Amino acid sequence: GAVVSQHPSRVICKSGTSVKIECRSLDFQATTMFWYRQFPKQSLMLMATSNEGSKATYEQGVEKDKFLINHASLTLSTLTVTSAHPEDSSFYICSAPRQGPSEQYFGPGTRLTVT
Amino acid sequence: QKEVEQDPGPLSVPEGAIVSLNCTYSNSAFQYFMWYRQYSRKGPELLMYTYSSGNKEDGRFTAQVDKSSKYISLFIRDSQPSDSATYLCAMRTGANNLFFGTGTRLTVIP
Image (cartoon, rainbow over all chains, first blue to last red; front, side, top):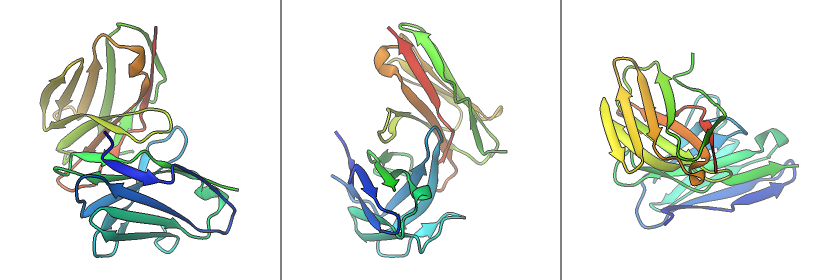
């Protein structure tokens, strides 16, 4: 069964609004979670590494003030897309390592459409 | 040059065929190699994980890593229509960050 969940699975919002996406590890604790973005027919691009109890680490070119990450507990990380624009429309996926760094399990993804 | 190169396909094969999927990479520091399967509009699912060079078999799936050539492969035997998906190779150094290929879209025709 699923070990990482995401909510919502799909969201449509208007330009200028903010959207929060939740990522939960279901039966294990995750001090680290990863957030990826995937555009159609493209691979996953790491956006940021979420660390429980400390600031997230963002990849080069990812605006930390636009993509707010909060890892408030060992089972929950949230990504908030602030002041969303149509170009932010994408498939956002989180992952968490379970038994080791290579045992990385992915959530089902959240499809964001900004109109 | 991308860190990980993967032929995006698409690749169509008849049911029962042997499928070969490949990735090349440029960073010799990569030590951990993975294959993920991703169905449409779903998150990737870990299929195979290999450390360093060698082969690993799991049912109909075999993963091969050749670090000297910086080349990894995934073979699927007796392919089934349910194998139709996008297959992503991924790799990393000792750190957690995964580097993904673009994915190969596979269709197995009944």
